[in-house]
Image 1 (cartoon, rainbow, N blue to C red):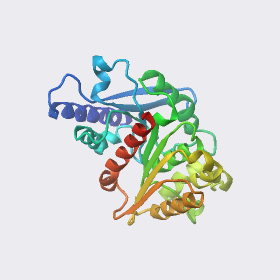
Image 2: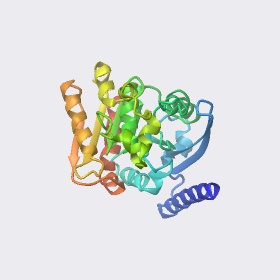
Image 3: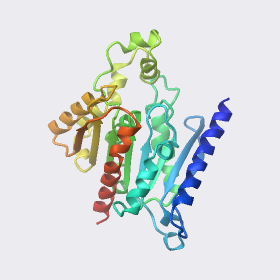
Image 4: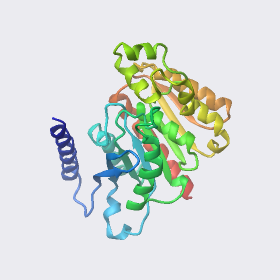
Length: 304
């Protein structure tokens, strides 16, 4: 059953890529999704990933050109193909067609339900994998510009938490960060430990990563709120954007507003918005153009 589902996922992406290419105007090179498998020593398992390449990447004239890179982290229940399946890649292609953004790579790894951090029990070291294995591999295997200013990271929901955690913990690696409907919580949800033992799915996912019962010290170690204070001086040079829907079903708008207040108190420049809307793909697509343009402007400002 699992193998059938995996074949279906990859076949689905292949169909999307083919439809995208056939619908585009005939040119010598096309945008494409390069989807592969990375064998991780740190995780002791394989991780699927997709790199979304602009058309110019494959042209003869650009063989020596290096590109900015935007790492894209999916939400809970998603995978490395979510950017294509949900329409984010189409949105980016439309922006390029309308000359609102230029060319950069988008790299989307499968994050499972890891919240993109090392788990408290030490069994899944996803944070170490991403920083120590995956990013260096991508920058060897693809023509990526060197330097933090050419590196951005963006995410939705669980991925929104992951990008803020990565960027605030490693400001030396990223010049820009953006999050939509990020799973931002200053403190663990009340009753989460009791919920985990009574079959609450959301609580079980949190305790799987942060400990059961949740380890408050470990929670703080990975908290974007705590990391912002710890690395406030280094974050002054980072471009930061995040938004959330005022009807977010998980209440993440509260955490987003609290992070805005925290960054304000630390005098860290950032762009923050609360928009009408819930928690889902429709909200993400309504605001994804803004973050793609935000990162492109950061790449361009650094280049100039």
